Length: 319
Image (cartoon, rainbow, N blue to C red):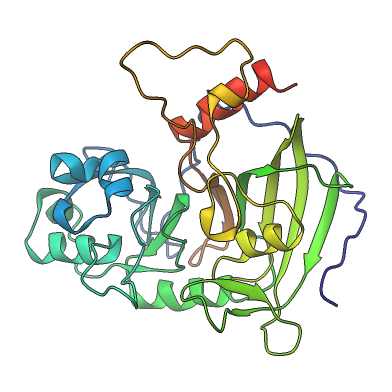
């Protein structure tokens, strides 16, 4: 089946408030009775040096590397796990098409090898990502501090469970408030780095969607991928005729205040900047059983500024 839309009786989630960050609960320590480590860090932000010259113009303009480093907020940490708030525009791991491009894992490993203070105070010798968020996506990224934890996390991410919830600002309005897309995905045969629906050669891909808020011409969605394909949420929404705002690769367009506000006037000598120029997709929550204790852990990431501002103006001018 290429695209299945199913009604759901699940209770509609509470509408997130873009100006309110939800604190992530701490995970328990080792189950062997060892006292859990608390406050493993003295700072809640990790600074990573990055060669800004290797970044594209859009990334350098919108991201910390313009000052020579990335500031990566720590969302959660215990003896086994480290969760970071990945910024949009920074690949989570090496880019197969541009291996010299800065990526989060390489920056982290370089800092650990160099004995940077944030790594020394944690006694880090091992750090690996349990999943690979898209370069354009912001939000929760989970890492393992030891190999057994990585193996356990890999098994969790390989199961059909909605571990991650994304907030997406899409163009258009879906016919149903709750729907599911079951459409196999495969790399596009002609466009490098693009995924497409391919019923014959694609891999099984399922995503649940739920409308959080509707605007004139736009919809705020909660997205729960049940499989972990590259660009899955983006490709599925494109397939449904609901491309994500700012997602040029999949038919999305930038969001401009001048197209929302009727009496918009630009000050002389100024150039209008889009409210959202990158892919408006944010991994806002990750829930999973702790790989050591089995207890449920939820890590949340506050909305980035551009998404908060976009929703603010849509509520004001596109209702």
